[in-house]
Amino acid sequence: ISGTLSTGVPACHAPLARANIKDAQKLMAHLENEPLSTRELAHFYEHYQKSNRSVRDRMLENPFLFIKVQNERIQSEQAKEIHDGPEGKWFKDIKMVYAVLGRLLKTVSHVHYPKNDPFKKQTLKAWVNKVENQAAKLKKEIEP
Image (tube, rainbow, N blue to C red; front, side, top):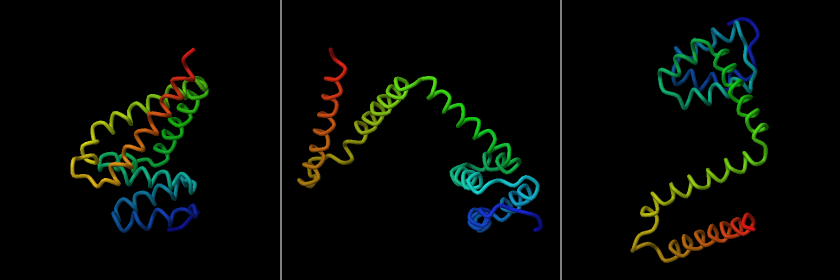
Protein backbone atom coordinates (compact mmCIF):
# COMPACT_ATOMS: atom_id res chain seq x y z
CA ILE A 1 0.00 0.00 0.00
CA SER A 2 1.40 3.35 -0.97
CA GLY A 3 0.35 6.88 -0.08
CA THR A 4 -0.44 8.64 3.13
CA LEU A 5 -2.78 7.07 5.63
CA SER A 6 -3.84 8.26 9.03
CA THR A 7 -1.81 7.01 11.97
CA GLY A 8 -5.11 5.70 13.35
CA VAL A 9 -5.40 3.12 10.58
CA PRO A 10 -3.46 0.40 12.44
CA ALA A 11 -5.61 0.86 15.55
CA CYS A 12 -8.82 -0.03 13.74
CA HIS A 13 -7.42 -1.93 10.77
CA ALA A 14 -5.77 -4.78 12.68
CA PRO A 15 -8.89 -5.92 14.58
CA LEU A 16 -10.99 -5.42 11.44
CA ALA A 17 -8.51 -7.44 9.36
CA ARG A 18 -8.55 -10.26 11.91
CA ALA A 19 -12.36 -10.29 11.88
CA ASN A 20 -12.95 -9.78 8.16
CA ILE A 21 -10.06 -9.40 5.74
CA LYS A 22 -12.28 -8.48 2.78
CA ASP A 23 -13.87 -5.61 4.69
CA ALA A 24 -10.45 -4.41 5.84
CA GLN A 25 -9.19 -4.44 2.26
CA LYS A 26 -12.22 -2.47 1.05
CA LEU A 27 -11.71 0.11 3.78
CA MET A 28 -8.00 0.45 3.00
CA ALA A 29 -8.75 0.94 -0.70
CA HIS A 30 -11.08 3.83 0.16
CA LEU A 31 -8.61 5.34 2.61
CA GLU A 32 -5.92 5.52 -0.05
CA ASN A 33 -8.10 7.94 -2.03
CA GLU A 34 -9.98 9.68 0.77
CA PRO A 35 -8.10 9.48 4.07
CA LEU A 36 -10.01 9.88 7.31
CA SER A 37 -8.71 11.35 10.55
CA THR A 38 -7.88 9.10 13.48
CA ARG A 39 -11.04 10.29 15.24
CA GLU A 40 -13.16 9.58 12.17
CA LEU A 41 -11.65 6.11 11.80
CA ALA A 42 -12.31 5.34 15.46
CA HIS A 43 -15.93 6.49 15.06
CA PHE A 44 -16.26 4.43 11.87
CA TYR A 45 -14.89 1.29 13.53
CA GLU A 46 -17.02 1.75 16.66
CA HIS A 47 -20.15 1.97 14.51
CA TYR A 48 -18.96 -0.92 12.31
CA GLN A 49 -18.63 -3.21 15.34
CA LYS A 50 -22.24 -2.57 16.38
CA SER A 51 -23.76 -2.89 12.90
CA ASN A 52 -25.30 -5.79 11.04
CA ARG A 53 -23.98 -7.03 7.70
CA SER A 54 -26.14 -4.84 5.45
CA VAL A 55 -25.19 -1.67 7.36
CA ARG A 56 -21.52 -2.68 7.27
CA ASP A 57 -21.70 -3.16 3.52
CA ARG A 58 -23.19 0.32 3.04
CA MET A 59 -20.54 1.82 5.34
CA LEU A 60 -17.78 0.17 3.33
CA GLU A 61 -19.23 1.34 0.00
CA ASN A 62 -18.35 4.91 0.96
CA PRO A 63 -16.70 5.45 4.37
CA PHE A 64 -16.32 9.18 3.68
CA LEU A 65 -20.07 9.54 3.05
CA PHE A 66 -20.81 7.61 6.26
CA ILE A 67 -18.63 10.02 8.26
CA LYS A 68 -20.18 13.03 6.53
CA VAL A 69 -23.72 11.86 7.35
CA GLN A 70 -22.74 11.10 10.95
CA ASN A 71 -21.18 14.56 11.34
CA GLU A 72 -24.31 16.21 9.91
CA ARG A 73 -26.49 14.21 12.30
CA ILE A 74 -24.35 15.29 15.27
CA GLN A 75 -24.44 18.93 14.15
CA SER A 76 -28.21 18.74 13.74
CA GLU A 77 -28.60 17.30 17.25
CA GLN A 78 -26.33 20.02 18.66
CA ALA A 79 -28.30 22.73 16.85
CA LYS A 80 -31.54 21.31 18.27
CA GLU A 81 -30.07 21.33 21.78
CA ILE A 82 -29.03 24.97 21.38
CA HIS A 83 -32.45 25.86 19.96
CA ASP A 84 -34.31 24.03 22.73
CA GLY A 85 -32.13 25.62 25.40
CA PRO A 86 -31.93 24.50 29.02
CA GLU A 87 -35.67 23.81 29.11
CA GLY A 88 -35.36 21.35 26.25
CA LYS A 89 -32.43 19.61 27.93
CA TRP A 90 -34.38 19.43 31.19
CA PHE A 91 -37.40 17.82 29.52
CA LYS A 92 -35.14 15.41 27.66
CA ASP A 93 -33.50 14.41 30.96
CA ILE A 94 -36.81 13.97 32.81
CA LYS A 95 -38.11 11.78 29.97
CA MET A 96 -34.98 9.63 30.26
CA VAL A 97 -35.52 9.28 34.02
CA TYR A 98 -39.10 8.21 33.34
CA ALA A 99 -37.94 5.65 30.77
CA VAL A 100 -35.27 4.24 33.10
CA LEU A 101 -37.82 3.88 35.89
CA GLY A 102 -40.08 2.03 33.46
CA ARG A 103 -37.28 -0.41 32.63
CA LEU A 104 -36.56 -0.91 36.33
CA LEU A 105 -40.22 -1.72 36.97
CA LYS A 106 -40.18 -4.35 34.23
CA THR A 107 -37.07 -6.05 35.64
CA VAL A 108 -37.57 -5.65 39.39
CA SER A 109 -38.64 -9.30 39.73
CA HIS A 110 -35.16 -10.36 38.55
CA VAL A 111 -33.44 -8.59 41.44
CA HIS A 112 -36.11 -8.58 44.16
CA TYR A 113 -37.58 -11.95 45.08
CA PRO A 114 -38.67 -13.67 48.33
CA LYS A 115 -35.45 -15.64 48.96
CA ASN A 116 -33.19 -12.70 48.09
CA ASP A 117 -30.13 -12.08 50.24
CA PRO A 118 -31.18 -9.71 53.08
CA PHE A 119 -28.25 -7.37 52.38
CA LYS A 120 -29.20 -7.11 48.70
CA LYS A 121 -32.83 -6.50 49.64
CA GLN A 122 -31.76 -3.76 52.07
CA THR A 123 -29.50 -2.18 49.44
CA LEU A 124 -32.31 -2.25 46.88
CA LYS A 125 -34.70 -0.53 49.29
CA ALA A 126 -32.06 2.07 50.18
CA TRP A 127 -31.64 3.01 46.52
CA VAL A 128 -35.39 3.23 45.99
CA ASN A 129 -35.56 5.55 49.01
CA LYS A 130 -32.80 7.73 47.55
CA VAL A 131 -34.72 8.00 44.28
CA GLU A 132 -37.92 8.86 46.16
CA ASN A 133 -36.09 11.58 48.10
CA GLN A 134 -34.66 13.12 44.94
CA ALA A 135 -38.09 13.01 43.27
CA ALA A 136 -39.63 14.70 46.32
CA LYS A 137 -36.98 17.46 46.21
CA LEU A 138 -37.62 17.97 42.51
CA LYS A 139 -41.37 18.13 43.03
CA LYS A 140 -40.90 20.67 45.82
CA GLU A 141 -38.76 22.85 43.51
CA ILE A 142 -41.38 23.01 40.76
CA GLU A 143 -44.48 23.44 42.92
CA PRO A 144 -45.38 26.99 43.99
